[in-house]
Amino acid sequence: MLDNGFPLATESNILQELIRPPNVLRTLANTVTGRSNVSGVLPSGQLSNVPWRRSAVKYTNNEAYFDVVEEVDAIIDRSGSTVFAEIQGYIDCSVKLSGMPDLTMTFINPRLFDDFSFHPCVRFKRWESERLLSFIPPDGSFRLMSYHIGTQSVVAVPLYVRHNISFKTGPGTGRLDLTVGPKQTMGRTVENVLLEINMPKQVLNCMLTPSQGRVTFDPVSRLLSWTVGRVEQSKLPNLRGSLSLQTGAPPPDANPAINLQFTISQLAVSGVKVNRLDMYGEKYKPFKGSEVYHPGRKVPGQDVATPETDVFWMRARTWFMVGQAPNARLNRFIPELNQYVLEIVRTVQF
Image (cartoon, rainbow, N blue to C red; front, side):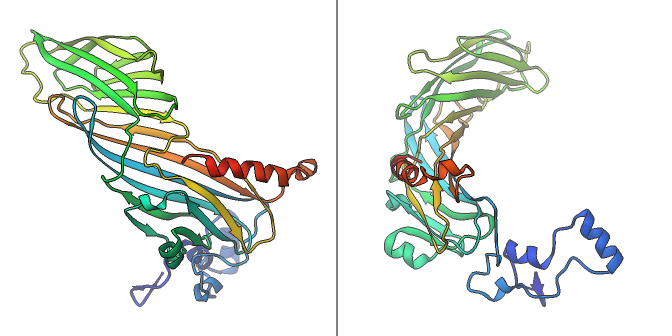
């Protein structure tokens, strides 16, 4: 919302109170009564100390979701060694809690953060003195924190690709040999591995044999897809075969880029670990649980003969539910269950 051309209200919660979301019933009522979707009363939150949160928030099921997303930019040489790596991370939240909860999130190793930025709800003085996130969250989805981890921290790239692509083995033929393997996965299994290569226009067809999974090639888009699945250390997937090239066409100037997608559960590349999440200011008791999930994508560079640029991202999701269990019999065990799950939350890796 602008006042004389200058931004006055930018928080989504304030804007939702000022401009009601349209629906069929409200449209019909406004047509009959002549009213507008724009409120003529300034929201109470605009003049409060927490303008990012709506007033009188109430939910039947109270819950909060925190997604830790990390994008890792790495330079990797032909032997698979990491030459350079840095991490750009985010903590995205979806909070649906009644009342005015005051949350505190602590990290086991907050000194890993080199640079960071916060949502206005975060109390920056407490971060400076105690290295924790103390905040009254907005209602709904928002980005709590962005952070950067530089090259001085050790970044363990969890997957490698050994590749050998040649377009000069003979007249109209080429060779392709790929091997995918886990690397520094902390004992975690690499799953849902998918490898894609956009072949140059000189490639007409691919005659490849995989040791695991399924291979497809689209002659129109020149997209080669290798669905690997799970990668085990004892049996590394391999793809090899020949390439059919246009007769008389010059070989490609550079080798194609490789796009590798994968999923690793309960693995933090940066080493950032969330210790716990506490809630104050409300009377309902929190029932806490956690879930960690890391999908990843890795994109090597174009030239096999030179160091390649690998980019992949990982996502960890942990959730915290607040409120009583729906089953009355289960409520008797919540104190013991809270203590048990709390120990899991303290030791789980994000």
